[in-house]
Image 1 (cartoon, rainbow, N blue to C red):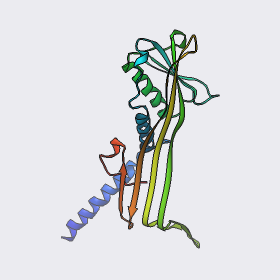
Image 2: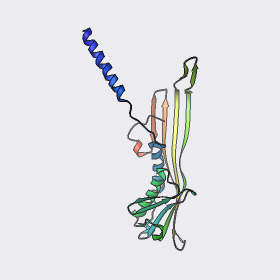
Image 3: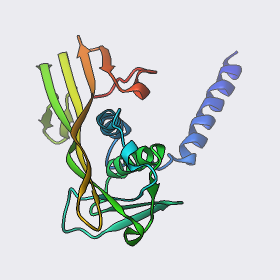
Image 4: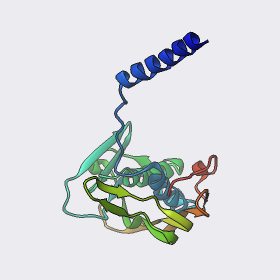
Length: 224
């Protein structure tokens, strides 16, 4: 029996050794989390929901984004869609311009890839596309204790109640005008949309979230 136990222990140690030798895969984190992107894109969906662009049916439209100035122009081509923006660092801005282009196409507009080929300009101005956050905490926060000759020791957070409330806010206006005469053909907005995700922890262990983001209603979200 002791010999069998020795074999079992040796087998477990071998497995642990080989797993340690295999190493840990490299994991990188993006600048924005998926939750942040979903908050902004959902707010943008709701801001643009229900607007009508039927007046542009059959017209050649060039879409541009004018909310920021001074940055280099960046161009994205998706087959027959041409989008111009002066700051395209974040995917959410690309998403907004894509939504407007989709709506124009659904209402029969002809989206051109060169401004000189357009008869109509659809200029998008972004008033807001960001997230507000509010935190509440009752308990003992984590802190660091200096230990002589041993460095620092971090203590865990003890939360009797903790809440993190995030609100995605989108606000746009679209000025659609004749490229040659400058006549305004259609003014959309300002229009606004909102989305939220609230995280709560009660009595150390019990955590849950509430949200109106469709993609986040399918599973529990347990991190603030």
